[in-house]
Length: 149
Ligand code: RB5
Image 1 (cartoon, protein in one colour):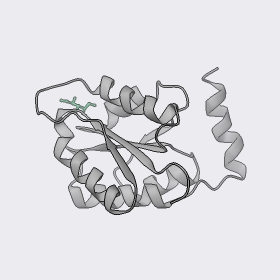
Image 2 (spheres, rainbow, N blue to C red):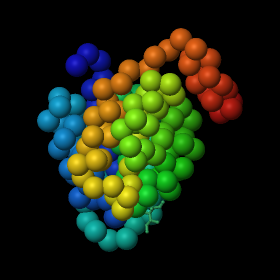
Image 3 (cartoon, protein in one colour):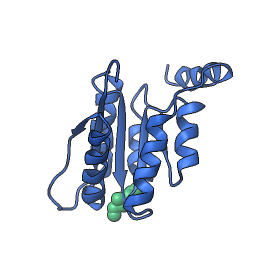
Image 4 (cartoon, rainbow, N blue to C red):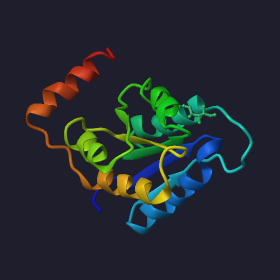
């Protein structure tokens, strides 16, 4: 896989097992999984884990980020506060494909209390296999970036 093939993964306490399954899954597909935890099950705070992963993507250290909490919603909200991040929560593969093709998303959020492992891994595959289409979508994505200035 050319260029940066690193995917950063993080979660809160609700999603440790699913995050580890996703990390193993992407590694088996040739990506380098950078799993930044947490690893112990104590209750923790999703914003800081979303931010930590988002900063690895925004800095260019990792090509993509996959982040998880109970619904995927809170950790997605936190990640999207970091400049340069476009993160969507997906509970279906179609949406995961479309946030790459149309929105050039660089992060995916999943809800461990929403979907089982099989569906989550299908969603991950859809996200990672769909390239940004460019064309008419370039200006629209750029408009999102303009709001960060
Ligand atoms: C934790 O109870 C839960 O609030 C969190 O995992 C997430 O779903 C927040 O959006």
